[in-house]
Structures are given as structure tokens and as C-alpha cells.
Length: 119
Image 1: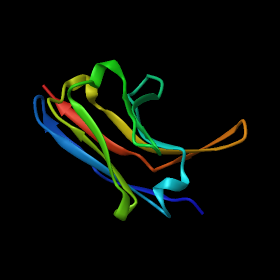
Image 2: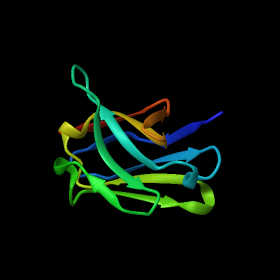
Image 3: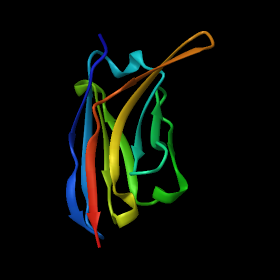
């Protein structure tokens, strides 16, 4: 059974930094991609950053230059380093892993971790 266990997050003032981690059960290479989504109250969940199995990364424009997604293959863990945080970054952050079987995509989710940025 796939498990994604998140840690980190918390509360910080604007301009501060936080790091969230996501430990996956099994090798992260068993997933086609992994990433971080976030959902603020009253808003849709959005993709923040992703990393594909080959290592290429992708970011939503609002976090480019401030957030960095990375992975530790030996620990089957991905990270999201968040710098220069803004109040609008406040949200529940979810770890995601996706697998493709032919044209069928399957998503796996962590439990979510709260990030709160105060002004």
C-alpha cells in the first residue's frame, strides 16, 4: 500500500523559511512524478512544484525563485524548501505521487500539513 508521510510545516512570519518533507513507501522511482500541491481556504488545490523521475522540476509562477523541490533517493523522500514566504502562501500543503499505467493516471496523497505565514 502506498503511503506518503509528510512532516514539517508550521507557522512563520512573512519573509521566513520553512521546509516540508514527504517520505514515500518504496522507491520514489516507482512513481512517474512526485510533487507538492496546496489548498487555501475557499480555493482549489493547485500544483506548487513537481519533480519527474528523470529529475526535471516544475514550479507554479507564483513560487518561482522562492521555493525549491528536491529529493533524497536513498531516503525515498522529497522536500519543498520555501523561502521568502508570503501570507498568500498560507495553505495546507499536500504531497502527491502519480503513476501512469498506459493512459490511466493514479494519484496518491499525503495527509497534508499546514503552512501559515503571518504578515
